[in-house]
Length: 249
Image 1: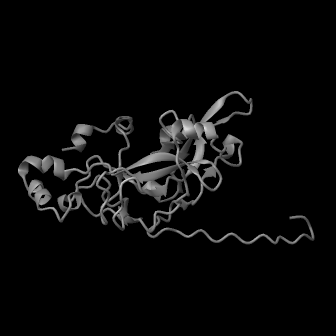
Image 2: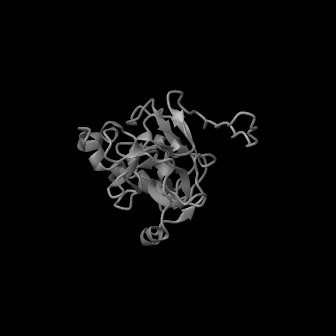
Image 3: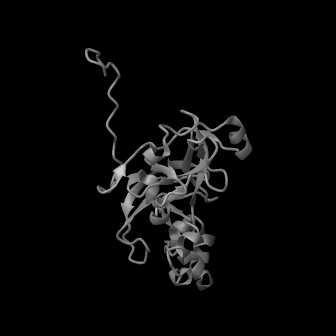
């Protein structure tokens, strides 16, 4: 502020850290724009683009609470044993918007994309968010990197190789489901988890920018106590030299 001018703007509230947030990761409730992009904020989604790709307009969710919470993985058979996961605190119906995926917004062509395990294509599937370079012609596709800065969305583990509690995967009230789960013929099916959440693009009701949200994709919903699991895609694991068949053993 200039000399003699009093700043009367209210002081922004301090950032509240989610429960069990790791101390070595910077928490961010909003997207952080990389200085390399030369922009101060994400461009708003045009009405034509929103209509074409059928992006819903929703209120941002930087925090997973009260729907989900970070917790330590305690099952030795879990691929992420001793690390963190995101777990459901209450029953979540299908298509529920749980939390956003927040991080550092970078160019999708950045070297960071090849070296980070937490990069998500901003928009994905050809519907991604992009900006114009300084030449006014070249388009720069954007990505979100949650490696060192982000929110609870970065805690979601891949479903591959994750053992599941049969009685959490099936409705406890269904005798038929319990009987099916105890049948050896269904042992392989019931011993491995399946993705129950997925990333979807939407338009913020606050400022019209594109955001990436984590939504429940399980038709039966997610029961309280279950881990939120997503599919990283086969390409993610193959690019890291992981044997997918060995992962399922």
